[in-house]
Image 1 (cartoon, rainbow, N blue to C red):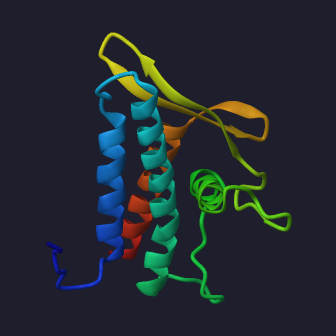
Image 2: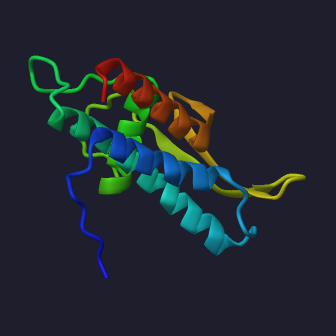
Length: 154
């Protein structure tokens, strides 16, 4: 049974969906198995794609510049935009111009354990820095979108 929506999702709806997905991934994982780590990593990669599509939702809401583009910061939003492109296309095209100024890649994907339980651990390499936490990056990008949406009144 499919649920019918009364309206197209708004930028706020899309942001809330990505936020819900990320909140789930930030919680403790049920186990440390390879299958769980792979499923959680794929889910995080889909969060990047959803976050990248928030610029499309903002465009549809009329929040664009004179060229019809939504400007994103090269830091968190640009980095997520590049990673979403990598997820969607499996590799960067030769002529790809990165939003973040350099082509980021996934360095390590898996899970780790601490005194609380098991956690998703995804590391991003960007400009020779391999210490970027994939979950923290997604959270920072969602926080940037939230600030933009509030500024725009969406």
